[in-house]
Length: 425
Image (cartoon, rainbow, N blue to C red; front, side, top):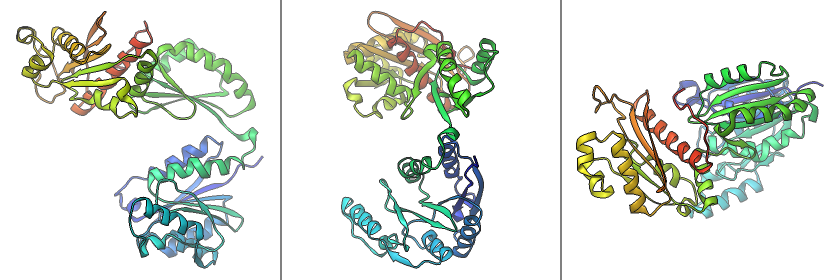
């Protein structure tokens, strides 16, 4: 069966000047790939109505599907609607659904509907609306030269919603079931990409060629993807997915079904299930672990307090770390981080703690404690574990890496994992 010919038309001076990187075409390609649709061609043009209209004419004579991204909005350089009207020889008319949408948008924000807003209601006569639940400009859909045209705003978050809610479901109906891909994703942490590939190669030398295995680093998590393109591969996937899960064990954070999750979300889920509270005692991360936890709605159920004790004085005053411990062992030491953990547990009346103290750089290093030296302590009042990590990279990377490791150590504690993670490869 013939595959759909899908082409993209990206518009905007900023794409050609290098002011912004075109991530939207990658988003579209990724969303369509999971339907078994591959982009055949992409064209990028400036905010020039004649150029845009000419490309629409050209592509609509070649493609089954044309997705146009950018140029829908209230400003003078938003001219995609005019270009589509010009290319399809249709007049611009005020679309009642677009008018209703912009009125509701303005009312919600308690702002007046002005002429710039009304510009977004002028669309090619006879087009259908693509709903935009997060932005002011609706998209549009129409057919020209037997080519189905979808037009979307350039704002990434708006494009993402419109793809997921409108365009992908529409295109899915056009793809025969035997041509659709089946994609399963596992979010993994505690094993590096190269180490994971070697592990799989060694463990499964007979991995079937029909079942495509891929990896994508999403920082801090690694995504392992199984793609089935044929009926044979789809039948094989059930068996091999279970074998892969068994191999990866507690490295698996989540199997993506509806949406990915992050380490903080998984930790909070586990804490809620156990009806437990967590606290943090942070030095080199400056509160990053607490911030990641409190980004998640409902985190207050499991997190009431965290402590950023950056100076030695505050470590002693707030967490009651004995000054003699710091004087004898230093702020970046097992003794100090254990004392921080115990102090935080007592102050917050929490069940679980993660404490970190390290040298994020670029200064502060000593011969025996170079930049990237980080001590962590985690556990409960029953038992607190500790470990020293030696990380490479710049200050921000070290802080982010430490926060991710800390959250994963808590996750593994909560699931009673005895597996060893390798956070450095």
